[in-house]
Length: 256
Image (cartoon, rainbow, N blue to C red; front, side):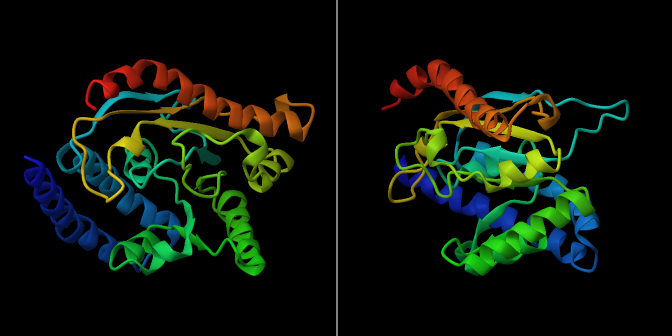
């Protein structure tokens, strides 16, 4: 049975990659970032749902979106911040929002996937290089302020080794401060359970219970200080994670 899940996961991923994502991104190449996103975003959402359901055999028990919507049904753009546990965070996030992420530069060199991520607006950064971090910061400002495109970031900097969100004192706050100073709303994203979907060897552990919550946007204008704003943003992520953990952890324990 174990072999069955691994083979099925590989086949599903290859079909989605070569017959759905790759052709869509080829079509999107000639256009600017905003138009590219309109083309590829629905495709990424579809592929992510299929990947989680049929390749990972994961069960999304909690899927909530509390963002405000205007009369046309549009949600606010802004800075999306999330906790980071696993590679599975990426497709889980894409089931709810298609905001280009800031990603490790190493991902750009992954065959095909790195190219698809770049076409879809992802911004690679080398965390150890000041110039690279500054370049991505400038790109983020241009995307949000100029193009009005939302950006996704993992303030922890890398995947949490404990599967729990890092404490506030350990997260990177540069973009929180940017959002506060420019009066840009922050949408906190809480995720739970993705760490358990893959083993340490990268193999599928089926039937895991996972969840994601997109919280209502946090507007800087309602805060008297940047410290209060930054702390509220990250604590919102933690509270969402903890509430899902209380509901889903017992279900996953029964699978062990």
